Length: 312
Ligand SMILES: [Zn+2]
Image (tube, rainbow, N blue to C red; front, side, top):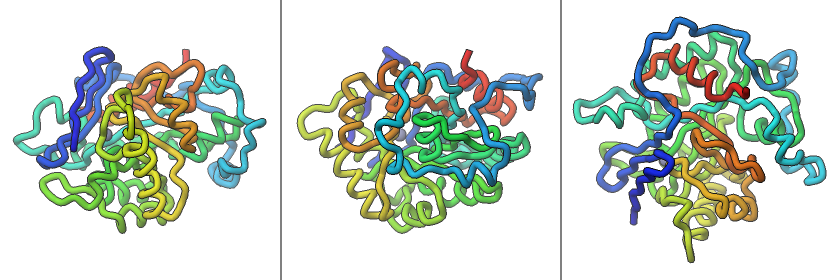
């Protein structure tokens, strides 16, 4: 069963048409997907998160979240005061088809454009971090590599495995993949990763997170929904990768205050939204991301990334 939801309130929406084999994606306000001329791309001097002196040093400081005692976790105000790490959200990585609408092209990034964005990040000195590193940074102030960025991929589309992951690895990058479990192994016009591919990504050092069972809007959960959408997918993913699943991405980027403690008590350490403002009480459960629009040139992506995460 699949529910399609549109929220006009925060102008965030996501289209996921699973059984009909169409596309999937998320969009939110603040994501200007119109291509524009950018005269200031690659400009440096932007405000970035606390970083270690070298990548090697930072890699050596990766902290297992399980080793961080509750007494060491900073309060909400401290977490909110730390400079934000830019986090990009991708969906499908494939060339556009004639049937793709203008709107859908915002979250279907052509292969060459994706490669260009990754090359730009590498050339600009960015280092990808994984959710464990972000958690240690936000909760304890643990150092991050220079120019940290997180690359996230929603839904579990097969092209993320076949196209994105190899491209990341060319640059020494790692990604976080949020899997919608109902679609695991699904074939068709828009195929999804199977269990072996998800396990392979985890074994290659990428992070696997949860994205509900069938993309049902978290704001509407009642009754068994928490079990079906959150608990069972978590167990399924843990059984596939053989590691705890600690991170969650909201379908459509949609959340409400009631959902945050529900995720916390089910063992999640961080939950990822889209461009909304973070919750002032539970910022770990409202970590911001932006969609790297499929129609953005890499310079536009760079500029939008800097602007969205540059704390004023
Ligand atoms: Zn999604």
